[in-house]
Image (tube, rainbow, N blue to C red; front, side, top):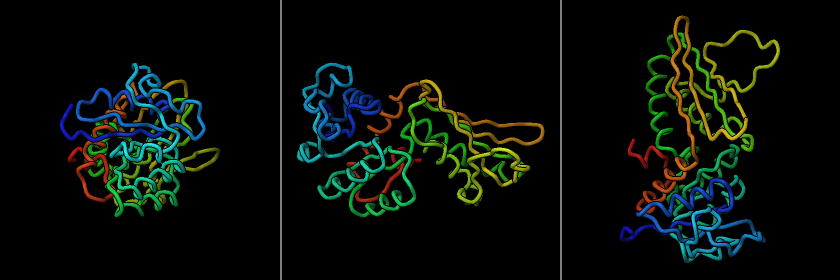
Length: 271
């Protein structure tokens, strides 16, 4: 165990990502599994986090509130739901904790509320914690600057498992935002999220989105730059949630050494 390793707590330890996060923290020699939460009143309160994650007893019990473990952790990792995340963010700001947020599906108002905490605590907020995805974002920026205004149509196609509740995915939206910013476009103005019926010919400045929800797909994203005679596709495929979990733990280690601010995975990775 690394000296001065950050004590990490995980929100929503009973969920799919929560269990992977527990596993990722335990595997990381530079981090300490310090606590985790389940829903208030859950029958899983008191259960061992390692047993919930299927990796064997770790000697750390699930709590049904952050207040119950307030003295036990330095940084919280939260991949829950917008309203829960914002409540946890307020708690961390009040009690001097850092936070890593991977929650997606936040509304514009919720994003503004989140940004309002930037001067109160150190936080990393990213729709995707994968190192590979964040490298892909840099590739997309380069490709968009080189191709986007030279007659190339841009489409974002994403696929996830049947249980995902928001669409397009936060990662797909981030990819669209990166491309739009590189081209000096506003995604809210030029993003097209639905094509049904007689929708007319494609506007050259459109950035289109298509969504697939099926089976147990962990996460697949492709950005297509297509013109007459050729097509360039930049794709990232995740085969395990552990890639997101490991990235989040890396972010948690990094953010504990930072001052107040709203950081991204590009900051964590030095991109």
